[in-house]
Image (cartoon, rainbow, N blue to C red; front, side, top):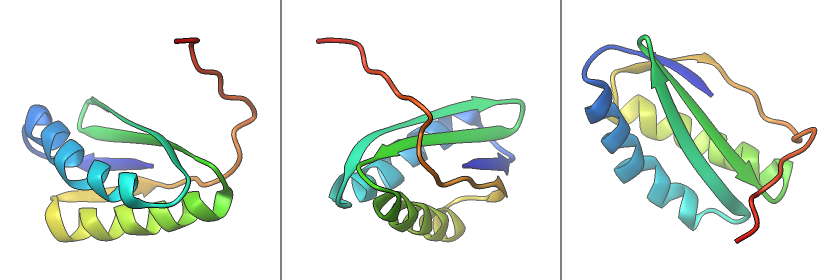
Length: 89
């Protein structure tokens, strides 16, 4: 998801970590979540076990953002990764 925002990028980063990440961790199918911030935009990327899990999380994130942040959805995309690879631990 891509949001536009105004304000302090560090504050936005901490708000999303402390607000959305706990919600995602409680959702079925959660795999990963990350945020990038640049030039007044937040890029939120997550991975889920299924598209249904991803859609539910997308809806939850949009609701949390609308209630807790001064940010506006620019673009939202839910679908299957063409590929996603994790480093071996």
